[in-house]
Image (cartoon, rainbow, N blue to C red; front, top):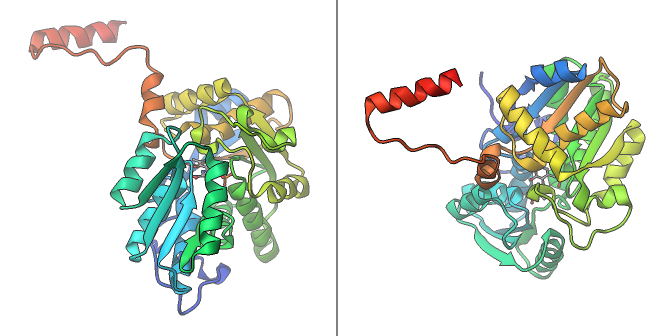
Length: 354
Ligand code: F0G
């Protein structure tokens, strides 16, 4: 099937003008995968919107394509962002395609390996700070304010949320209706706000129903759940290791208007979901993404998601982004055998019998 990327496919829903560069890495149009085994176990109809299959491996590509195109249209020479990794990879890919420079500011030692590798390969200038995402965001906001031609592409940039909303359109089209519940990880809280905007717009224009928005923070960085800024956020899901979410108020509005919930999940619950989705469904998403699946399991068990309902869980990033956490899940390293066919066959047969 032909797919031209978000700026073309959803042009009538976006602030795209004749001066907007035709930027595309053919982002969007990601699959909605039924999670059969979990559906049966939980007694719901569960689907994953696998955003890890976007061009740079995360949902960030949806918003970045418009934010970078607009930056170029408005005369910027450089884009800048703070990032837990995925935003930086995405910004760098789109910016380089339009000949713009990229500066990314990341928390030292807390960004998954694959994301740093991407930023390097796309040619970003990387600034690693002895601080967290929230500290990085404060700094880049100031740089963008003080320097002409430098555009901030974090989700405070309104074009990001505007184009990320297209994921909600796709969910409704793929399912043939809106789900009863939309489960999503919450970090800086832009994506939950974007989905809610998208569902509302489709409701207004196409008469589709509205889901209850269920957002999930990691317990060690659960600012919205706890109602206070977390000075030193921590979680295995480094993507959502954020203690002062920018779109805090928008996320609360999405929750309240939809009759939803923002809750937290522990690192153990995240790791359980991370393993389970890979091993039973064949879908490998990064740890932070699985906060949404962990949240679905928790919510079915505590009765806040009703049995029999249709639930879409957003898997925001690809599992390959974070190879280290994956390797840490196994207590054995792959066995290395001598190159002796009999020995190799003998060993494989012993596995089969085991
Ligand atoms: N999942 C993944 C894989 C992410 O990378 C992020 C955010 C989120 C969920 C949370 O989304 O911030 O819209 O609530 N990552 C940002 C980054 C902060 O820098 O890549 P949100």
